[in-house]
Image 1: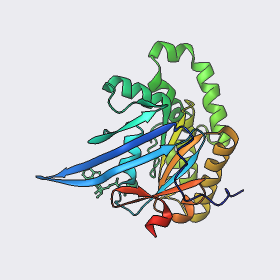
Image 2 (image 1 turned 90 degrees about the vertical axis):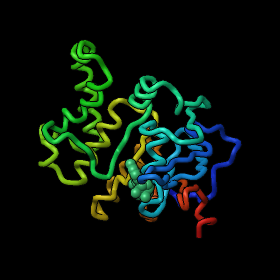
Image 3 (image 1 turned 120 degrees about the vertical axis):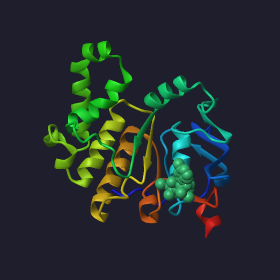
Image 4 (image 1 turned 30 degrees about the vertical axis):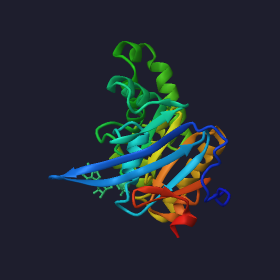
Length: 249
Ligand code: ADP
Ligand code: MG
């Protein structure tokens, strides 16, 4: 069932934010010049919320998602989780936090081509644990991976490699890989961007169901307004800042 019409106003300040960023600046160097991409982005995400960030291609959506998920660091500003600053932690602590707290889904899936679907999903748990621990827990991990694969509707594809899957199936596999480690937040970067309209809708139905049934916090970026409207709330990234859609009109 489609989500209710999303609110286009920023979240009220009264609810304490779960994931937040303040005054984020990020520029990329091009020769001598710094090309500013984010110029003072403020954002708050509540636990259990499904937030869409919409913006044109090149507006900085991926950059923002990478900063929120500790894949990159801001030039200025801060990112916090449960009120605690996380962007300035030592690299090893950030790596650990990123692996445990965030699950990522990308437009082009980024599955490992030589691994089966099951092995791709298990790779999240392999990365997180030592060889010894993984070996000791392998039965449990396999059960967790199989049950996540079943949840995304791919139980009949366990042994298939990515090249033997359709685009929609690859994205389902990527979602299973992101969620098998039970992250607190799913960060999705144009998850339907490479799919036809109907398959994109199916992926959105899966995400809205995970949000509704399991209270999974989701931050999704997209350039597609119709896709964005499937979330509970939409913010617009324009000229390096976030605005409500009303401001941006
Ligand atoms: P979006 O995801 O909204 O399309 P991006 O965050 O990918 O936007 O990129 C925003 C801008 O920053 C674009 O102009 C892009 O060319 C530039 N950019 C992104 N990543 C890099 C990089 N690693 N080096 C240089 N420029 C980059
Ligand atoms: Mg992008």
